[in-house]
Length: 310
Image 1 (cartoon, rainbow, N blue to C red):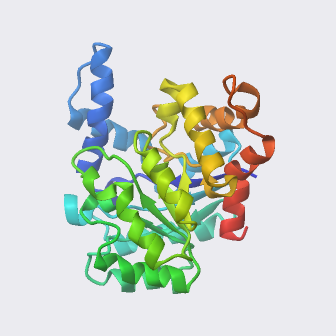
Image 2 (spheres, helix red, strand yellow):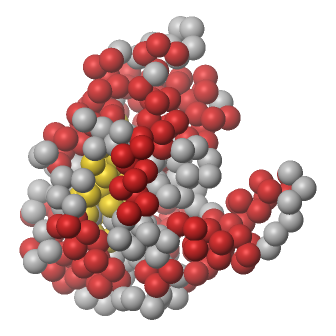
Image 3 (cartoon, helix red, strand yellow):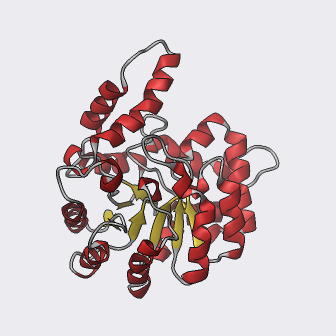
């Protein structure tokens, strides 16, 4: 069973347009190297149009093509930092929950709300108790640290309901701020919520993973997903394999999860290729670095299956 623990749905009315223009900055920079010159606004608007997926049809087709059985889906609440989109975040969460009910076993919805938002705890409580959402996603880059006091009521709800929490870690493109998502700010959560499953999305980032690894060796409720590591694997395959091997050696294989961050990284590497790259590690890893089929099985789905009770 293959489970992608980190995916989104891009819809114009669900996210601030500035978010897409921020992603476009990275894309236009790469385009310019090839002699293609477009504005961030042009590329961002095109990206939004091409990836708009309100009914998850594109995601489901992508899953089918890549052999992914189940995807965890969640919104992100950037409204306080970038301006609220047309659809309020509570309604966006409800729409995600509705897609989970429409596609049981295929899509598992987590809730997301900025903890500084008025009524944030009530929104999350509704997501869990009324709509059956299965976890919480936090994105500190929108302007808060994961260990500040406004976050704790949401974590308490998650802990009470035995739900996992995914928190963005590592860098983030403009106009969002990376200082809030450095992994050291997760440390307090390991002390104050030692039994709460906390997944560091992106494993601290491809240049910050060592600090995440340091925390995971001593905070045993911390886990990590590999979403956005497509870029690392593509540009430095040996370095990617070495980093992943360190996570498995210094923590446990049971604490690493496959993730794609789809649709954000489709232009970097298709999910067909990303799934295959991970599955091929036992046969294709560089000399001196080894992975077992059992380890890859846990990463690709066994760990998420256990965590989510599937």
